[in-house]
Amino acid sequence: MTTPRPVSAADGATGRGVVPRAALPTSMVLARLMAFIGVSTVAAILAPAFLHPFLHGTTALAGVRLIAHGAMTCVGLLAATALTLRWFGESWGVATGLGAAGFDQWKLFGGLAAGWFAIAMPTGVLVWIGALRIVPAEAGSWGHAALLAAAMLGPAALAEELMFRGYALTLLRRAWGTTAAVALSSAGFGALHLLNAGVTAQSVFMVALAGVFLAIVRVAMESLWAAWLAHFAYNFVQLAVFHTPISGIALPQPLYRAVSAGPDWLTGGAWGPEAGMAAAFGMLVVSLLLAILAGWVRVHRRGWRFDIDVRPIGRGES
Image 1 (cartoon, rainbow, N blue to C red):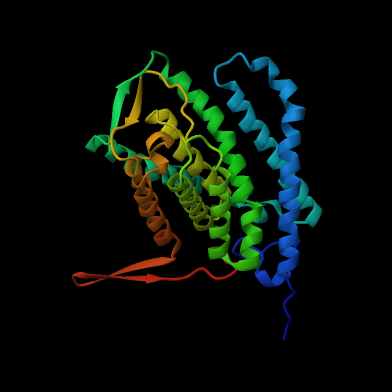
Image 2: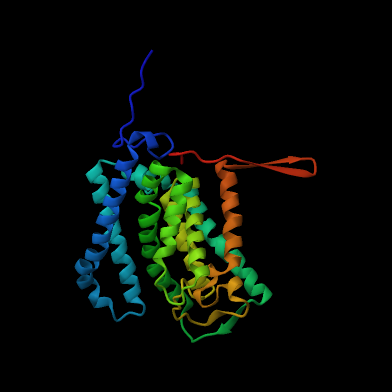
């Protein structure tokens, strides 16, 4: 009988994209997580100091400060992730989900579509029933504003995905399993927005719920690329399509804007649609579809009745 060779943490391969919990003691996994958080914090602070002089000449452009901030943070977190993985001998693609295996056209399209429909569907319904009202805004170029929004939102979304649903999520899954990892990373994602303008208990809860949704995209598709595009689309629809605030930040948009005309608990009020319960419904619908596609949920028709079977995700399983 042949004895299989154990898979080391450096190999990082299990056939499901995540090193099993037994490969490393929990204490060592958490030590790696603390190291990653420390290196990322330092990199996020140092990156603007090194990169800002190169971007200073473009500060005359509208919105460039926000664009530069997101890009610099993104560069810092990419460098921190690469440094940490090299230090511990981890595989980039396996540890982050940002490798070639996740860069599949259907995964990319699926992530983009998931983020788009999760917020476009409920926001469109709010406009249709009059809970959001479209009002005129200052003149300008819609295309130019949309490009600026994309330039700002793209790097910022990738930075947040690297921070919460990249290597950190992988380590948390190794230590405590997928359910706990999603809950902890999503709570941290919500806490990150506590200092935003107009923050409320509901807005923080809804951001944390969005973290759960994005983690479902990440795990279901085994791709951080997909989660990044879902995150980007989710914010882009609000800012560039409906011209609403995002996470309490209202940016000038040309031609029209959507303002809340209904209860804040439903529309999100000044925080934006992502803070309203309508957005929760959109994320729930798309998450259920992803769970069905991933095989976690199976729906069986028996005559006039539908039975739903749920398969929990085990520890260390994608």
